Image 1: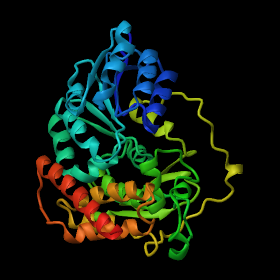
Image 2: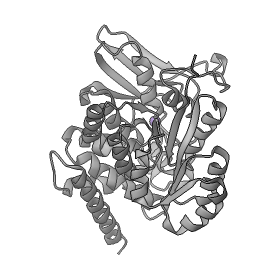
Image 3: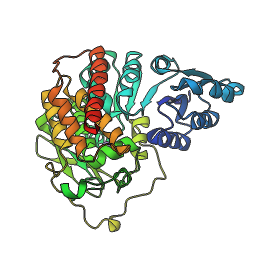
Image 4: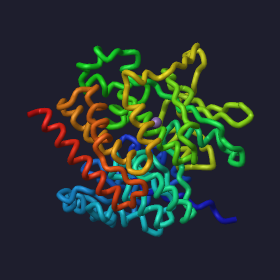
Length: 391
Ligand code: MN
């Protein structure tokens, strides 16, 4: 009998929060997974360390100034080293790759994810912005290439897990759960003066800076609503959000007979990462187990859409369709950046996004080139609005 071959993984964004946790999962399951490619934007030191440990075939560093140093570090191991944005897209064509984990942050994930799909690689998708911006083109390309997209986002992983064995049964509705973030229950007055440090303290999840700020502003849930629309082929009116502060139920599917299925467990990103990498198998893990006595009550409430306007803006962008989610996303990336630098207040992030959406030109069926152009254009005009406000 021939031995089960390993599943060889390319991790785009291996030095970030999802990337490092994925490597932990792989390390615990070395008979199941191999590492074929690792990539990083600027953190060459950690990328070198990871490469020496996991011995990938190749690595890519986006920051070209780090290329020579990295090449010297990995020379003795015979690991190929590439640099730049084009290399990041073309590396996904490597023959030895079975699955590409896209753990890049923001719009930067769009091009490499598209390249991986076009190369016929299955995708474990941790970069929600890719589907938010170009969900129409990405899902269409995946269908044409026979490529599967396995969600890594915990809510979407939950829906996906609930759908196992149910793919022929239509979904009536889904509920994405939201923790509400660190500012749940706060008023607009209280939020006016909050600092990045407070927003970066998430009560349940340990994540990167961008997604943690998005969680605090509820934009993360807004982006996830759009992500879910594309992943599961839903109409906007089939998607709802419910605040569940304990983050134990990770999301819920309601079928046409009225029955609801939820997936639950402790909030730990390693679980959805492992499910996406190992699908359809559930690999044995040593992750901490849930104890009912630690959670005597699970609570549910409506999101506060008046205070956290981003959620409504995301629904609006989804309902308008076309390039609007791309506009929303670009404006939000600039807003988060400005908030982290304390150049923009917490509530003003929504004002900036709303202004960008109101002034953007609507395109009903954008191409990838259109998306790249719109993204750049909105970033420019968002920065212009910011500098005007400062003057
Ligand atoms: Mn999520």
